[in-house]
Length: 112
Image: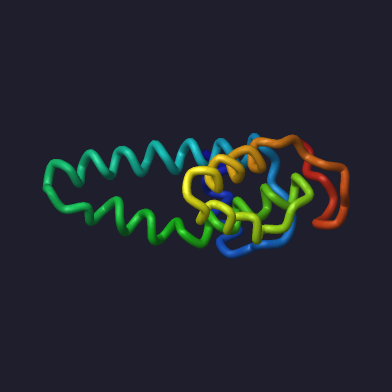
C-alpha cells in the first residue's frame, strides 16, 4: 500500500526513478481498486466511481510510469508508444518490466 500512497506524495513528480517492485505494486493496487469500483458501479448501472478514480489517478499513473521508464534508461515519452494499436501496449509493458539500469542520466538508481 505504501507504493500506492507514494503516488500521491509525488503526485506530479516526473523526475527520478521507480523500481519494478514499486511500479508493479502501485499498478496492482490501482487495478484492484478500479475493479472494486467498477463492480460497485455495475450495481448502479452508471460508471461514476470508476471514472472519477481513473481521472484522479491519471497524472500519478503517468508520473509513476515515467519514473519507471527512467529506471530502465528511457524517457517518459515512450509511454506514447501505447497509442499504437496492439503492438504499442505490448512494447510499453515490456519496457516497464525490464530491469533497472545503472545509468545515472535520470538520477541515482533506487535500491529495491
